[in-house]
Length: 238
Image (cartoon, helix red, strand yellow):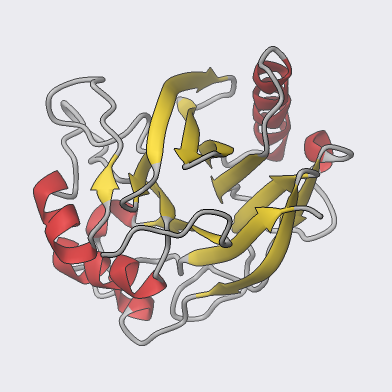
């Protein structure tokens, strides 16, 4: 895969891979990786990248990720078998480097976490927060407030929050991001076979501009997971 020219739009994607179990109930990592490769993304935030029980072993093999997609997994070093943090993992294209990796514990009834990664593409900086928020709206609001609080303690950078927000409504539930982020949901992403809910979203800070966005609705994507992948082309705001 070629390195990305500096100052070109960056394609950010989010994909809940459901531990590689498809809508046909088959676990098929290669099918998921084919969908990821077809997105043409520079940065991919994955949710449910690790198995739920035991040591939370990765559902994807890091070497196979790179072989099939040209992307590499950001090393978490949380343990010897997991790919991510609370199932959140990030894949990067050549030419994009991870400078700082910070797992975030999030409040709520069920265990949830987010992953903050400061990225560089040449001279361009991007702060990414990869999320998989809770099932209850009250918990999701607390979790977004916690993320904003963590971000306020850091030097300002162009920031994107990407992942499965688990919010069904287009009009409610995202209030903690008001004023600092624009939330993008180009189409319903769940359920993959019959998309009715915009659970997966990408939020961008005011330093970033959305150029294009969409949901991957290929025949393979409708089988590979119960979520469809979401992508957005972003660049520095003029």
